[in-house]
Length: 362
Ligand SMILES: [Zn+2]
Ligand SMILES: [Zn+2]
Ligand SMILES: [Zn+2]
Image (cartoon, rainbow, N blue to C red; front, side, top):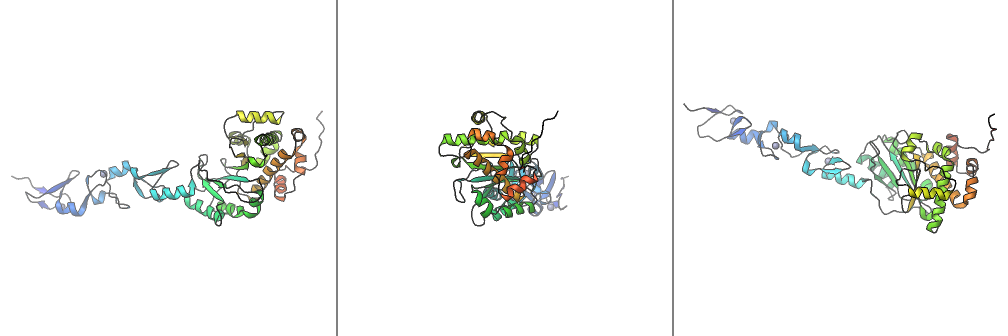
């Protein structure tokens, strides 16, 4: 007695010499094979259509899908692992990777600087924003506010941020930042998209100043930088308050060097220290970087920050070491005339015009 074969798919009884195939443990007739089955594009196993993952032109068995495929983090397209492009440890399809690389640059990205505004002193701002998404579309929206007529900013990833990025301006004069660049629109857009800056524990506001604006020769520049370092150390409590950072946060991201009696000793100390996580980072070749400020999306605070950096550079350029040592915070503040900076100093209770002498406790 011959064994009768039955197609497990359609139930038809197969002729003795009829061809058939195996789908797992099932016997399948040729018609069903053609109409109901296909081969996994990856492992070539014959599987039922109903059990295959058919998406974005793929035809994949369950086991390959689970072990060798993933999805693009942006467009969610199904991808074989060999077709994945990784950017910042996140997997993308080629198209999304291309978009990402064009708008959100790697942390190390450094374009040729474009200088905006007149004069010889320029400020490059790095503003970290977080909690709104590491998102190409958002980056594009912010870029549109800033760059619609000129390439003013670019956007980079930053490993210290959970879900955000760093907005970096090309170098601009203080005047240009205040009166020509669209800070108001950029900050407003960032707020609108749900980003935070001050209200995170991660975000900083860093201001680069070109070394060439501090002196003609390298040794002149070094003298001025030593007085900048000294000013920050001498007025550390006020600078900490101005920065809006907490003590522990500033220790981690923008620590003080530690006071020395002479500006030159401070510079020597700074040059002997490795790393950029200091209030004033002197590692870059073309700039020095004021890192101590906490991030902000408030226009007045951003302006005030640029203005105080400008003022600190001015006193460091115009005073001798001895004059600077004698300069009290209240004398420094009394020179200030910029309304945004005065407003901010008042907000932070740092605007002290009349020095008050307090008698020592008995
Ligand atoms: Zn069949
Ligand atoms: Zn397969
Ligand atoms: Zn994609």
